[in-house]
Length: 162
Image (tube, rainbow, N blue to C red; front, side, top):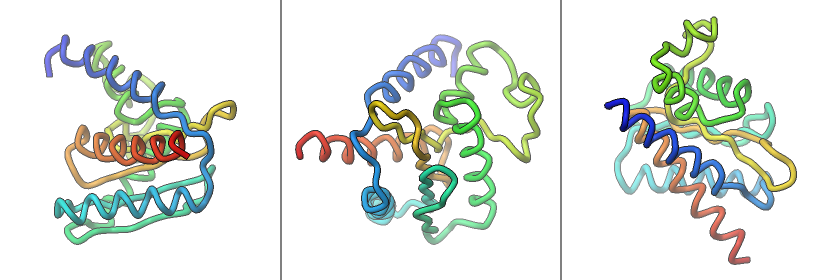
C-alpha cells in the first residue's frame, strides 16, 4: 500500500466509523449481527471467527471451519485496541502506517496483547458512544474489516427503516 493509498484508506475508515452509529444495540441485535456475519461467511465459504461484545461481556461467538484457537487470540488483541483507542483496529493500524511508525513500538504495547490489524470495529450508539465491539478474524485484515462493515451497514439500515 502506497503512502497515498494509506491516507485514502484512513479517510475511508474514518467515514465508515462516522456513518455506522446505531440507534440501539441490544443483546438481540448483537445476536442478529453475529448471525448475519456467520451467514455471510457461510455463503462465501470464509474461514472466520465472529465475536461480539457489549461492554466487556462476550454476547456472541462463532467459529467456522478452517479457523484455529489463534483466531481467538487475534480477536482479544484487536478488541483491546478498540477499547483503548476508541477506533477500529484497522483505523488505528492505518494511522500508525500513515505516520511511518510501528504501532506496538510507538505505543509501547506488546504485540501479544494489542494488535492494530483490521477486523475489530467499535459499536457506537448515538448519544452514548462506544458500547461494544464486533470482530472478525481469519481473513486478510482489510477483508475482516470489510465483512464487519457490510454487516453493520445492514443493521444500521434496518434500524433507520424501522
